Amino acid sequence: MTLFVGSFSEHGDLLNQWHAYTPNGIGFSIGYEYKRLKVLAEKQQFKIIKCVYQESEHDAILEELINLGGSLVNAGGYENGVMALFIGLYTLRLH
Image 1: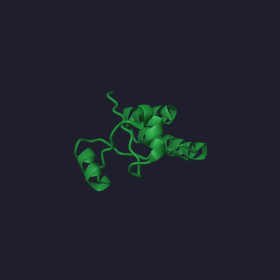
Image 2: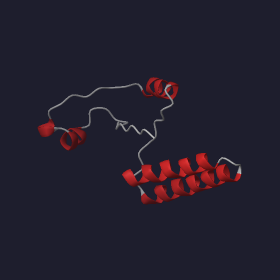
Image 3: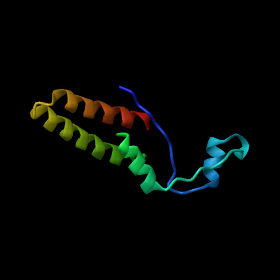
């Protein structure tokens, strides 16, 4: 499995982003129009998903993934069910 990760902000050119991600606030900002970026991503079978920081939201996502994985396994798609669960768990672990 190949996994690519990018990080974007819903708000352009935020001072705290400059402090957190650039040496001494030196760098540049590139703006993207979300709708166009999403279309391009989907054409290449990529997904743009919002980063979740709240533990309660992690629990809800995990429950949804477990239910999805279970329904795929029950439908005979064992590998797809396990893959969905694995990707979801891995994604949560990254945050």
